[in-house]
Image 1 (cartoon, helix red, strand yellow):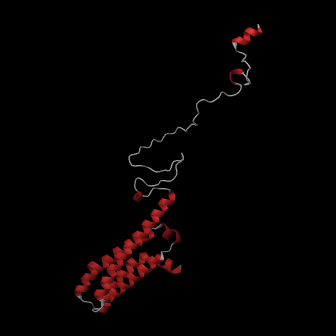
Image 2 (cartoon, one colour):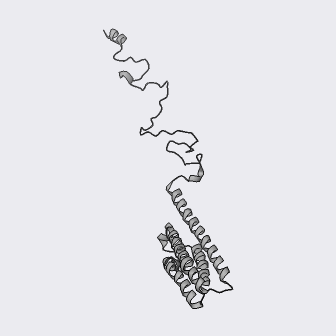
Image 3 (tube, rainbow, N blue to C red):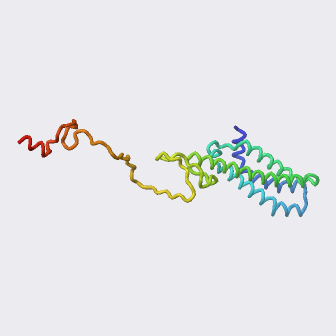
Length: 202
């Protein structure tokens, strides 16, 4: 864990240290005038911008911000790239082409790895929050709906959302409730408002 946290703190300082090493290595190993122009106008800006961009991509991940530590994939990727940049700064006539090619490939691979990890974490956060995934298409399962449906949205289907609560459907042919219209509901008993009963009382 301490190594991952150390790389987390090293990301931004590396954007300054690595370009300075290239300039220092040119002076120590006496690479020549053309190499100085290459270091000054190509190598230093490329390493500075690349390392800064990679550091921002790594620190943009929620897991990295929460734990203040990079992943083990980040540790492996940055280790390979930084070691190759150091070898480039040695300016060995025998190993310089291999070190430079390896450093370029390592930077591109690390950039792809950082983008992939960031997209994976953002996708997992969106799935946990219930947002639909864009690659699922119009016929994707959207989960169960409050009305008991399957949640499948078909192409061309129009959904109307209202604020009115659904009512219970009343069945036809329901028998009247007991005691309706003043009666007790007993068979054969007449209602007090029945005209035949009024005549009999008279």
